[in-house]
Length: 163
Ligand code: 4NP
Image 1 (tube, protein in one colour):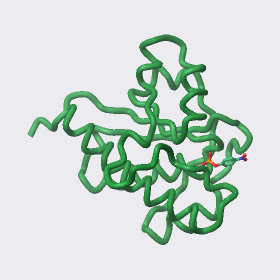
Image 2 (cartoon, rainbow, N blue to C red; image 1 turned 120 degrees about the vertical axis):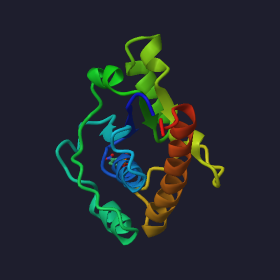
Image 3 (spheres, protein in one colour; image 1 turned 180 degrees about the horizontal axis):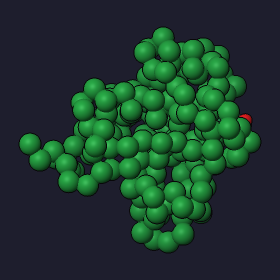
């Protein structure tokens, strides 16, 4: 791959869905030795949980699948729209908020929905698990594993490795 693809995953609080997406994608990137080609980060629309580790429930469910979620919550900043190549929203509300924040047409075009990359699931968005039970967290992880694998395939197709 020629240029490094920088991905920012975004949800509302940056303590459940987007840090899980970050951890899942990072593991895929590591597994395929693509650290020089793809970087991942996450952020939230809200600053309400700034500095916090991911929600304990999400950390526990992710841990059972082999993901260690260690990022700290931070809000999306305007600089992110210039810094990242792909800014990926978990649901339509996050998507609309990001489009409102994006400074210009070029940066608006970086904003995508996570559901675009689903391969096996037909969901339109990644549901907020915050007020759900264990099933909600498991569903989010199922959806994110599917979408991260689809996203990786798409990046590799768009920008194949040199060798
Ligand atoms: P997330 O879940 O957007 O997946 O991190 C949420 C976390 C916190 C809140 C809402 C959603 N909250 O309102 O505090």
